[in-house]
Amino acid sequence: MVTDRPDFTESARTVAPGRFQFELGYTFAKAGEETEHDFGELLVRLGVVSWLEARLGLNSFVLLREPSADQDGLEDLTVGFKALLRGSSAGASRAVPRLAVLLGARLPIGNDDIGSSEVVPGAKLAAAWDLSDRVVIATNLGWAYGFADDQRFHQGIASLVAGYSIIEPLTGYIEWYGFFPENRGGGSNHYLNGGLAWLLSPDLQLDWRVGAGLQDPDPNWFTGLGFSFRL
Image 1 (tube, one colour):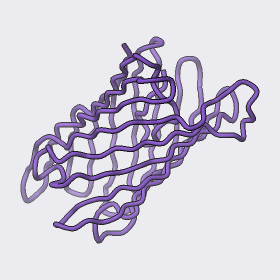
Image 2 (cartoon, helix red, strand yellow):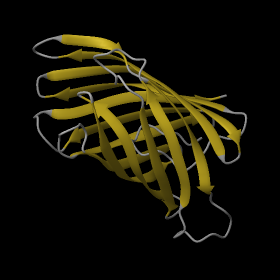
Image 3 (cartoon, helix red, strand yellow):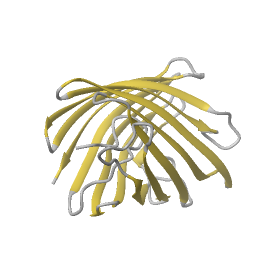
């Protein structure tokens, strides 16, 4: 089972036809005097055919604690699909990556203080290289048409992750990702994180991650737990 969590980078693999995969978790984040709890992070993936999956993100219930005021509510719903452009094949060179494209949109049905008030479309290209039986390098390049302060803006998204199979069934990773910009009128923001995934069975996985932002405010860090299962 290959999941799209706990790292930020989306995998270049799709769920097998007719299978449901559920990925969910919890994240705690602290940025300066602001703290945030995200409960849920639910992504439902359905294999349609061998190269295509449908995706539904129910996302999280958010508790945001700030010195001036507290906010809470549901995040927006996300819908989309992932299509495999090039899969792995026997005898293929390790220099040839697996490729997938993700298209989707965030729908404005969440709490006004937490989500967007407009549809936010986006796209990503996912690539992955199996450097050995134990090492995988993957990257995402993406774009979103964001909305904030009653105006649209273009947002670039990029990530790079290295995964290593420590011992069967434990895998670790380290990752960089960034937004260009993260919010309208702001600058680019960059993050580093790492974590572990423990495959308890072919259809059940636990995960943990911890990371930090590379920009102000200070402190600026997050950690989270999750699990995924397949039916």
